[in-house]
Length: 372
Image (cartoon, rainbow, N blue to C red; front, side, top):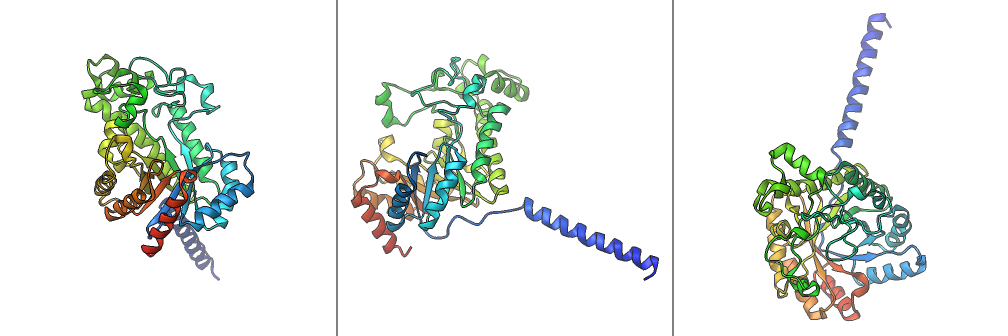
C-alpha cells in the first residue's frame, strides 16, 4: 500500500472511531429510562429498619405481591446499603423497588447536623436547626445554599447507584408548610388565614442575597412579602432546581425520578412552594388525602383530574396516593375507581403495614376485575 493510501486509510479509520465515540456520547447524554408501567399500577410506601431480619421482609414482600401490589417505595433514610440489601428480596417476589427518601426535610441527618448554617430560616428569624416549626422532626434544609443542596443531591446519587432499583423517590421535596391542611389545624391549635412569619421560609442570608442580586430588593425589608410574586417564584425555582438536578443524576445511573407531592400543582404552590407540573420528573404520586382537608371522598377524583390536566403534553405519569387509615374497604374501592376514572396511571397506598385484610381483598379484587 502506498504512503498516500495508508494516510487516507488511517484518516478514514480515525473519522469512523470519532463518529462512533460521538454517537456513544450522544446516546449516554440523551439516555431516557423505560416508562414505569403501561398497566394500572399498585404501589405502597413502607419504612425499613436495618435491625429486621431478611425473613421478616420476605414475608412482608410476599404478602404485598400476593395481594396485587406491583411496586414498593422503601424508606431507608437514604441508606444505600440497606436499600441494596432489600432490593433483591423484593425483586425476588416480583415487586418493583423504589428508593424513597426525605429530601429537603432531613431529620436525624448526622452530616447536616454538623452544619447549622445549612438549615432553612423563617421570616421571624428562627432556624429549623434548633427551632423547627410544628413538630420536632421538621428539620428543613435550605435549597439555595450550595453546600446543603450538594448534600441532598449526594444522597440522591447514593440511592441511584443501587442495583435493582427502578427510581429514586423524592418526598418532602418542598419548603415547610406555609399552610397546613385544614383538617390538621386543630391539632396544633392554629388559625392560618394568612402567611404567618413563623411558617414562612427561607429567609437565610444566602436566599435573600441571591434574590437581591436578581431583583434588587430584599425580602427581609418588604412590608408584605407574601404578595411579592418574584420572591414566591424564586423559591419555587429553588425547589425545581433540586429536582431537575436529581433528574439528571437518576437518569445518569439508569433510574427514573419519582416524587410524593401535594394534591395538585396550584394547591401545592399555595401551601408548600411546590409547583410540580414544571419539574423535570418521570412520575408523581400526589398525596390526595381527602380527610386531611375536610373534603369528601369524591375530592380524590377532582384532585386527580386537576393534576392530570396540569401535566398535559408532559411525559409525566400520575399515580394517586391514597391514605388508607380510617377508610373501610368500600371507601377504598370508591377511591381507586375515582383515581382511575380521572386519569391516574395507578394508585399508591400509605402505608403497607396499615392495610387491613378487608382492604387487601378489595385491592386484589379490583386488580383482577380491571384486567391487570
